[in-house]
Length: 367
Ligand SMILES: NC(=O)c1ccc[n+]([C@@H]2O[C@H](COP(=O)([O-])OP(=O)(O)OC[C@H]3O[C@@H](n4cnc5c(N)ncnc54)[C@H](OP(=O)(O)O)[C@@H]3O)[C@@H](O)[C@H]2O)c1
Image (cartoon, rainbow, N blue to C red):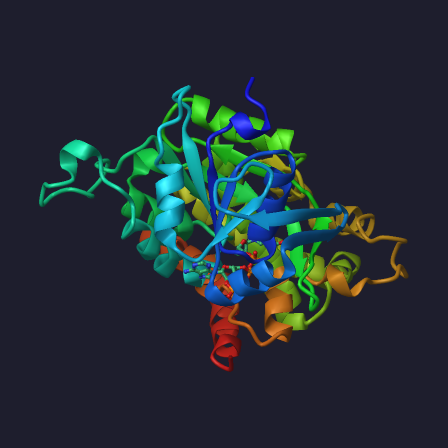
């Protein structure tokens, strides 16, 4: 098995909470990471000279030149990232690009990377070069954004054969002093969409595991994606509109019922698309759906730290609520609008989700 510096370079797009967390953890295990950052974030990281993780995991990893094993190789030039991931690995292993921008930033980030990807030598002079699989190198792409639309965007741009499904529940947030606070390493699921389990996914999971990032090969990544979508619609819908933290949701029977109503509708859309939701770390959706409302209320009250009167930490606000409070654009279209659109196309009625979507769009219009 390969270790540390022996792996091909991994590219990460977006030096935010997740981008820095994955970069620092992978680099601290000796791997080569190229982190494509905005000018503002690149300047800040270069000035600091390090990426600093605090909280559930602490790491301080030096910033260096792209491709240097053990360093977070920061660049603002997509061509740097493209050059490194498309290089030929002596052992024939695939490199990867993990997109870690917000959902609404993804189309622009994809376009920037696509524009710089080197072509296979035989295609470089052809007018048709660059379409589909004409790029040099055997690399894959994946996105950690919430929602399902990110994989459509990646497949449209890079081709479905290069697109690997990914779901991350690593919890991270940026602190005012530049550190990234890790709430928990969660689980990263990776899987092929329409192909049997592959060496490239097994390799990606192995390199994450080696970096201390819990990761699993998902035999049915669509089930994981839709289960996470159910959870996101339920949790974000309830906590953003009530402005209450997660523990308040679980300790309040009315809010548990609201959560259930939203996950039920999203599950109906999943079923209309031929996908069966499942039980995954942090979002046991099938189990929730099998419970009666009163069983679910009882189960949820047990999730509250310290019981119903437990202390509620400020960090217990889900990420979309944090975006609301910080005056940032919320990923309403990617999480809610997309589910509503898929429901309409499949002829599934989702009145509650559509209402929540409209209310959140109203809040987003204030940003
Ligand atoms: N954070 C979590 O705990 C968590 C967990 C699971 C899933 N997710 C999902 O993961 C995604 C990322 O979340 P996050 O919390 O890491 O967001 P974030 O902190 O806002 O990070 C996004 C990063 O992307 C950068 N960026 C945007 N466009 C870019 C471009 N064209 N080129 C290079 N960099 C670009 C941003 O630049 P600036 O630095 O200039 O802002 C920012 O650093 C979201 O879709 C979120 O829903 C997050």
